[in-house]
Image 1: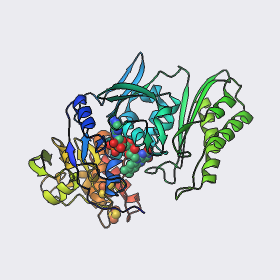
Image 2: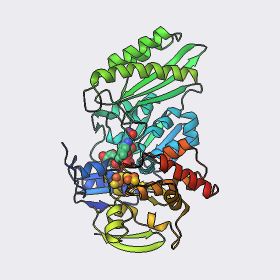
Image 3: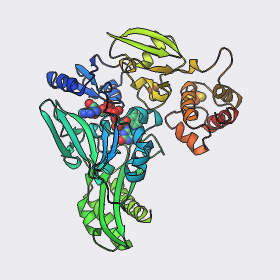
Image 4: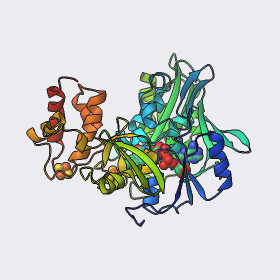
Length: 292
Length: 156
Ligand SMILES: Cc1cc2nc3c(=O)[nH]c(=O)nc-3n(C[C@H](O)[C@H](O)[C@H](O)COP(=O)(O)OP(=O)(O)OC[C@H]3O[C@@H](n4cnc5c(N)ncnc54)[C@H](O)[C@@H]3O)c2cc1C
Ligand code: FES
Ligand code: FES
């Protein structure tokens, strides 16, 4: 059991005004510093003493421009400080990247959505992170920067284990880049929780489908909370890709997705239940996406 | 220690705070505004809800240092003199509270909701208070209170 103290442990607080300054602090205090965005993951974890107190907490919120939502010819770009609430209410995301807006809407409470960021959700990298399955189905790329330079990592390669990512000690996620989805694609995010709000997903399913005249032109399916990381289930996608949609085939794809999941037993649900629910939700998500 | 400037209920404060101090601790312990409550300290219950630059947030999850330069509104900032704010009055009139522990947070969430959406549906009210737990009322009367407040405020 984790111990919960009401008071935070001691640390030093740094608030750089520029990205360069933040990166230089991060490289100077490598391994001893922690970046804070909305703090909705980090503060409870520090209070619970789930993570050791860093010597320095580096707050990114004073850096201008990082909270931009940009939509242009290259697609959608979310600055690292874009909050869950901003994604939930963005007109362009609701219209063109609805699967992500649906996930944002399903998360936490208004208070947490006002503070918490999508980037923080990704960097925290719990298997149940609700923004991950949509970003996997949308083929998001992550721009990581350090003093040494920048690199772009596909979201599938970003998650390396529970709570683990491809981020190096001295790197910051600067931007989430999402390509334009094909014009007639339809996305659905379904989240199974005990309560209607304020719960982490027992299972999360995102499906993005491109239907044309009853045929599945393309499909992407991603799962949350049923493997060590959020995952895309390509074998399940392959069952439907290029085929005519029919109930038996959708059923088969859903079963395949369940087979690809690797859930665990925990206090929130058993592995068997999770696997069964993957099948149910994948089926439901595909059918809803076709009907949209 | 970190020097911060806060405006709380339109009153400016200049404070020197340790980096690990939360906004909630500053509000309750340094400023003595004990209307804002600490329930869980983890973002789950909403008892600590205040408005920061007009948005509802959990003050238990915000470092005081992060609130530097921000405008904060707590439940104490709603009434004008002896006259309760219409949301507060509606909670009194419609039995929207029993023990009262969740009430300041509930009222601040309701305020944030009505500021954005003066004529919410019942579903929107429910969504607006998803981050606030109440152990006493069963929520029905809280929802009625917020509905009544919206009506009394005439969609403003
Ligand atoms: C009551 C409650 C309910 C919640 N409900 C949900 C839910 O339904 N679904 C869900 O998925 N999550 C939920 N969460 C978890 C959390 O709110 C989200 O994961 C949120 O998106 C985290 O973002 P943040 O900006 O607050 O992250 P922070 O706490 O600031 O940071 C999280 C982690 O990411 C790192 N980090 C942040 N930004 C960067 C960056 N730019 N570069 C490198 N590293 C970075 C930090 O160092 C830290 O390790 C909930 C939390 C609470 C308290
Ligand atoms: S005390 Fe802040 S949410 Fe419970
Ligand atoms: S009135 Fe007692 S907790 Fe809500």
